[in-house]
Amino acid sequence: MLQAIRDKVTGWIAYGIIFLISIPFALWGVNSYLGGGEVAPAAVVNGEEITARDLDQAYANYRQRLVQLFGGAIPESFGNESMLRGQVRDQLIEEFALRQYIQKQRYRIGDSELNRTIREMDVFQRDGQFDTAIYEAQLRSLGYSPLGFEQELRTTGAMRQFESGVRATAFVLPDTGKRFSSLSNQTRKIRTVSFSADAADIEIDADEIEQRYLAEVDRYRTPEQVKIDYIEINLDDIKQSIEVKLDETRARYRDNLQAYSSPEFREASHILIKVNSDEDSAPALARITDIRQRIVNGESFSDLAVEFSEDAGSAGDGGNLGEIERGVMVQTFEAELFALEVDQMSEPVKTGFGWHIIKLHSVSGGEVKSFEAVQAELEDEIKTELAEGQIYDLIENLANLAYEQSDSLLPAAEQLDLKLDTSDWFSRISGTGIAAESQVRQAAFSGDILRQGLNSEAIELGSDRVVFIRLNELKPPQQQPLEAVQAAIRDELIKSRLSAQNRSTGAAGLAAVVAGQSLDDLAREWSVAVDDHGFVERQQSDIDAVIRSRAFKMPKPDEAAVYDGLLSGGRYVIVELSEIRSDDADVDQKALDGLLEAQSNAEYQSVVKMLSERADVVRTPLEEL
Image (cartoon, rainbow, N blue to C red; front, side, top):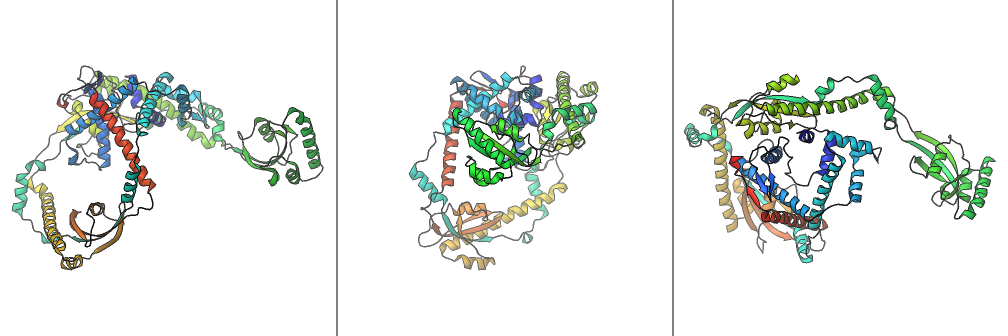
């Protein structure tokens, strides 16, 4: 249970880590922290169980994405809940079979690659460098040991290694690529004319509305609705109850002073006399010492650099090195440079390149923010860290109590001194307050809560909010009276009548132009204008996508134009295609890259499908889960 809570309750850093170790599948779910108990598995793949909770989590993720994609309601064309759950389970089966195959074939990444991957993760770095203390602390906060985390990365790396290997085998034959490029570059000359009947001319009487209502009475029911009891744990609320002592804030400031300092830049020039061997060192020192003395005596540093410096990169510019920050130059050079005062010249300095003299021109940056300027930020940082620790413990305790006393959230709320709230009524697709969260609505209408009356597991609402819910009251679908829906039925009938009339008139017009009538004459009959689009491209964005797609499916015209018709946006559109141009001279590399990518995707998906079909799979009927 502890591991599961850690899986579910994490901060922004955790999201960065989890993203890097998550396997690259759209529907991959997280394991249930309550375990499978005696509940039948959703499926068994080569002896390994996909638990019902694995399926529930993956399905919830998938449904949530669909709801977000389609603005709150999943189109009927996607099928019912059972069909969607079946599709998600099939995806999970494919993923399990693939992972098992990769393990069996011993795909893996080496220690050096693993080490480089970890060290390059931004979440484990301080000031651009890997920090072991941050690494260990962040893993502890997520419930990982270094060994466990590294094993996750090895697994993920192996799966990506396999995937990239399959994709790398994809290829496109030259002739295929040339033909595809030619088709991609093709343009088509089209004109269109549209017909749309006037809705004001369509009359719908009361009898028609009543007949539609009686014929489809089940359509006019209110959706199933619920109220829920819920306990919300919010990181911000916990932070408000935490007090940070001034001494703690000052200590944090002192320990991280470098983080509140801007980089210091030093503009400098130098003169270099190279040393190629030990025998050259003494003569080079003598030369650089002589040059320094001449500068002390009043000669120009810049002029002498142009004359004597053996640094080809700066000599021509009077030895100017520009602005330098720490960590750029070799250590002995840098130490001397950052010890100089403005306009001061160094003594001779020895590096691996030879002997230098350095002159400092100016200093910029290096400012340190005052404690007062960052005090509020530091306090919030400390509060956040403490609150994340508290929220973990709180959710762990709440999860235990909600599971052990699964028939009510009240005992858990009372024992932990948490507020128990009740939502307003909401449906599967919309709600207010806590029910505005799609994850909450999805969970509220799940079998465990809606039918079995159990408390939910932790539902994460972003990186800093977690909620537990249970059913308070259920309102079954109710038949709406005719008076409540007659306006909607009238609109449906008008829309249907308009579509039929547009299709009928449009089809007659299409037949006329195919028989020889000009598109211009038909437009005059319909009292509309002809839209001349000229030559359009396959991906041209300023043309209706439905019209453009149809135009590129029409047969090539010979001597006369060809015509086709379609409904688009309720109107009937006749498309005239008169000419096709293909540019075979220039190969569209972008199009070829897209074709190769599509080919690699298809081959990889084919391999995944093959592995799942060869696996020994036992499925539990969905209605039993």
